[in-house]
Image 1 (cartoon, rainbow, N blue to C red):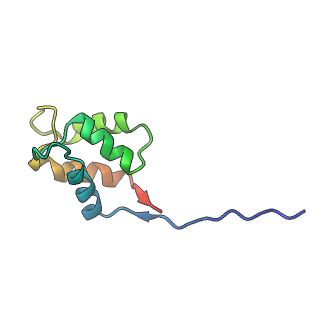
Image 2: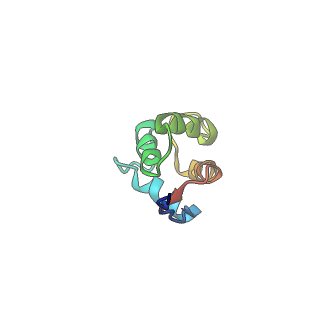
Length: 90
């Protein structure tokens, strides 16, 4: 009895630069900050399981002034949060 071998593809971790670019590209209204909706779409794009949960948790982690948005000064914390979750590309 022979088994079919599965194709396994190496996965590369997204770099900080790639994560930052992805988040910046999801600023759909170009106001320089990310809303919960925009964050949800960004986390969906990078393959997060439960992207709405990730977006809300990222806001709690990175939103320094608690205005409900990821502003320019919060992007570094947002990237740190996403980097800890080790999102990958195929």
